[in-house]
Image (spheres, protein in one colour):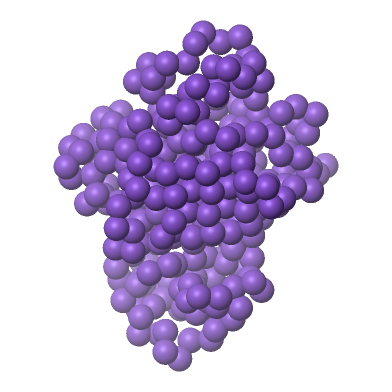
Length: 288
Ligand code: MN
């Protein structure tokens, strides 16, 4: 199943080129009182919402996918966890390119760096646009397989990791290159893209064997496969959960393969991950 959020927080099932509007299924989420509990409430109540959506589906309105504004499929992750250097060829290109390395010591292995967080306020869907904050600096695309956590967990063994995964999406870890800390360069508004929808785990036979392709204005820039992840999906879920309790709706961006490069206002990034989905993301200049 491919499930999406669109327009003014509507809920949809993606069916080819159309969306089935099952927004009334959101009424299955119990009302909340302050303070909001940790965890995205759509994900916490996912099974109930989906059961209601399936009942509604036959008589629900359908609309063309091309006509809606897609929102991130998860509205309220408690955190966006990121793997910084998780493909060998990306480590190699990072060490070779002064525009990425910026005088830092040689990059070696993900175990030396750990994971990092992006601000949840940086999150947008494919219906938005990436708004470059410093268009005069180098801002790179990083296409990454995004894992969406379905079930709370702490110290999750690798062998149990998949039980905590609800599904997958495309992630863009937009990055301003420079000397500053990762959370400063990668957490500007619109610098975390998630979507175009969430594909549930049952539709992805093996998340550690998926083709990823990113094109900018039609030109292939990144073309890789998640089998080359240094720490695969299972290891990342387990490792992240040693440090952080993972809550429903939390997102893990698994790291970018080689081929990262700059984008400019006006560019269009076409993103594809096998079995998960594809979509286009426009690049603009930050307004105001
Ligand atoms: Mn990244």
